Length: 116
Image 1 (cartoon, rainbow, N blue to C red):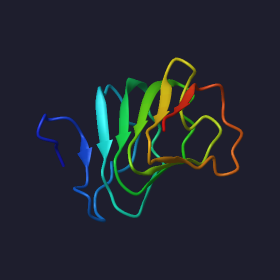
Image 2: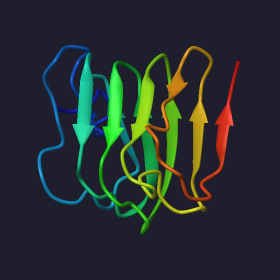
Image 3: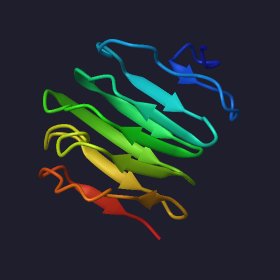
Image 4: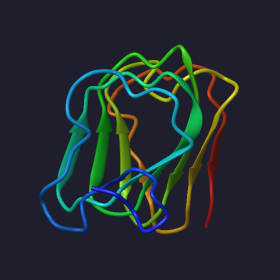
């Protein structure tokens, strides 16, 4: 499903929508907007932005080769692997009203900023 800007956009706030299987490469921005829990076991490669604006985004893969930047808005980010948030070059921002559920993981050295 495409966003109005032509960037990858998964779901419209409902229960459907996923990136499918296989690695996610060469992206600039991806937005998840799925109610409920969205489990993404894809590995991310390259640099880009990942935004979650609804529900729970579970990242289950080792993304140690990705310089990702996360923006979590009014939703929850739940890493299910120590390197799920990517390498240190990226950042994770948990906006006011959002949650980082570390899910029992000892996360790598990815910078995390919690607002509000």
